Image 1 (cartoon, rainbow, N blue to C red):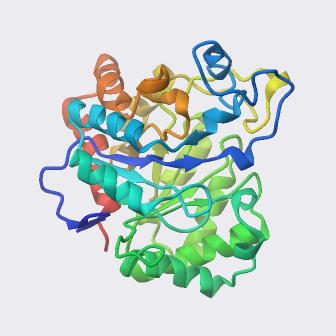
Image 2 (tube, helix red, strand yellow):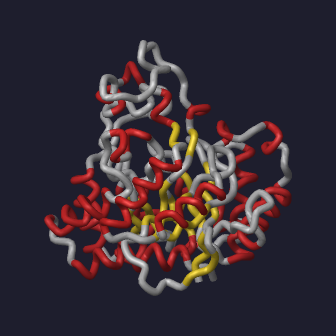
Length: 341
């Protein structure tokens, strides 16, 4: 069974599942200002070019919060042939279970909600003071009873935040999440640093804390495409996620505020996935967009939540990835990851 905001469902009929997205999120507290006259202005056609290089050159780009816009965007994904999105926004950067339920009901697309805590910098001092057991209890309550006093349950743990090097809070948070994963059998996303190998250390720590590697996904592995790092994660039995499709940023050194460097391209990602399939890892690969920016939506000039279905699947085919392997990556793997137990 998979737990969605509308209740438990079976996997029957699911197709082109997105295992890591953000329908409502607010990353603005993490974004440091840059010296640019447009930084505090709304995202518009006149300044859109700036966010194609550094997505945080415009602060407004870090907020997704309009239910009508999100509904339209999810309908575009539905039209492309997909019908389940996992929203892994945690309570500290914009998760709203009632809005997720509203969008799911308006679109008839299944939505899975996340739980737990994100990176150290996004968490309030009050929540940082929680004990490991208190964090664990919050996660288990979200999964089994409901989020924030509602009867809307989470269906995936995470994305659990870790940084360049895990802080004391991040270790406590990941330990709590790992124990909750072991007790409940739900899948767990680990937000890993995009520019080093700390995600492998976080995975090892989670397993030491009792989590099942085969129900863990290490996120954001497709920015540097570090082969040794990716193989290290895969050889532990975990999923690796290519979740930056549509993000091909070349971040100028003078403008770096939240991002530390530039990104691989979608073409390079598809080529790397082909290599992993040939090496026997196709059942451990997850693919999605991780939309957390206004500029990635159709409404604001981007490719939308349907990007991997509309554009990346044909690109995979162009690189010789078979229909069977695409079905494994786009449907079977995320279902297996999201099914509890």
